[in-house]
Image (tube, rainbow, N blue to C red; front, side, top):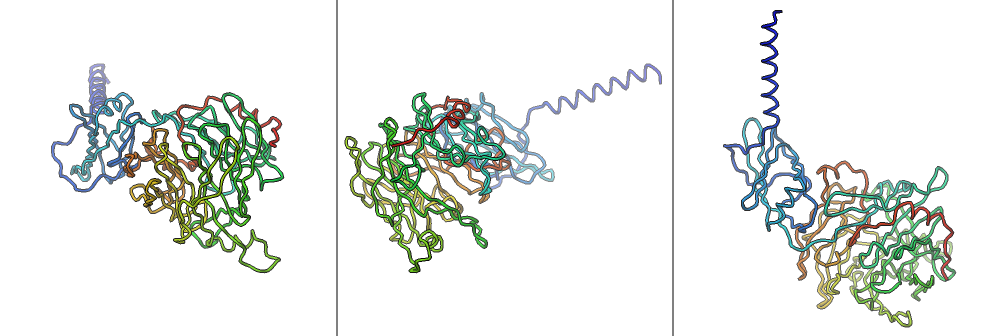
Length: 500
């Protein structure tokens, strides 16, 4: 082959490569001809029409339409951004510019069989109400028996940064394992927190302004150690329920498992004095999930009254309760608290769910003290396993209660927390597939209504399609936990302090 021919081939090869490179690097363009559809585009997560805080991380989404090509146009007054492909991932710089507007308009164009269609445009609304910058949650595999790889994580809501607070594997080995649960913070303060360690080296880890200790709260006057915590809003006090909890597995029920309390009471722990105060109650009452009013003068909780139905002495109350688990109905109560004497008054009914053959749990009061959010289903107290569980809201001034249809889905809605401003809530839901719990966030107008909830944003929009873990107990924080996981691990290995 002559040198001339070689030069011609090389020139054509280089020219073809430049053309391909130019085509690959060219900016996406909105098609000049298309037909309009009245249907909203199918995207994941479903961000159509949501309201987001001004300081939230960029919302990314995947287009789940059938098509050969996709172009998405995002507009605000005077600006336009175009994205090619079936994923839309705004950069932090672009997202910051988008968030300077009240509304972000989104148009998705789909090409199939050489015909372009524009799906119905939708808006993402931007609220000037900022959200607490961090949340904490437990990541757990929904296998019901696996707990060695549990972690408590924290996530910055202003970006996608996620880090470990503490993980089980720090102090577990092939012979001895742990379970960690029930992380909780005093007034959203990451420097004042607690979580439980179960099984090997069991106890409660309490961190308070840099001091980290392991506490053994078992006493001769309580059913067991403290379980579900509620920090007093101002004092060094934590209310707990103390429980005997078990699991029953179904063989012909899609809900798979039932978690039950066979015994439960309330107790108060003094962080400074290492003292436990049991709260006197009827032995046939199952008291659980305490929560303080913002002024610290009332302790709210849920309670079910259950008396053994089988008259045979050989049948234990625990076995009897398991056999009649659908008869256990919890209602909401509260007890007044006197700080100086550390004493509680008689209980008062707040909401009688049992009278309507329903069961209420997880009372959570807004920071302004006006609104009580709770979860309600047909029976029991662990509604994370109940597909009929929905969120409800009570106006504490009028006593009116309504189901939060704007938040609920056809599947589980369960654990929920208010932000420190009271303008946002985060709650757990299994609406995506019925198996994995994901966190959803919604804006509250302060008058009893919420906007459409949106799923926790991720850098990879398909992340929650791929993550084989459930989020458990999402809680807001005003900043990150700065105690290193190694420090918590060291505290777990230390001798526990015996509560009095």
